[in-house]
Image (cartoon, rainbow, N blue to C red):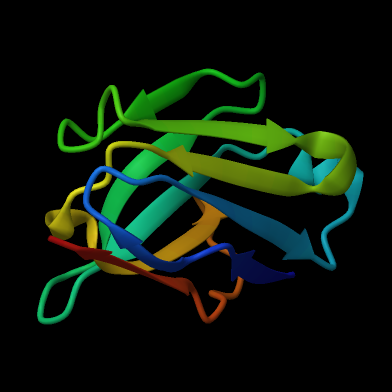
Length: 116
């Protein structure tokens, strides 16, 4: 299974982006029960957990994005989404998604750049 992220870009502070991630090669019976997560890695920093979404759609968020980001999943398409609103310059990073436990192969990520 390989993760394929998309949807990043350059946006001004206060703007919005919607990220998408597909678990390429996953079969439905494996994807559907898997808790999924969004991570991000800023230059010079370690990768951090941003959002977690359980198999039944329950979500948890890092304090830094709570109230601004919303994670969702589309099991039929083996896809997870991250709606990011009220973006801040400190949200600038490469964003990745993966299964929360027993990671699949990491994708290239998608770059999000927020200008002030």
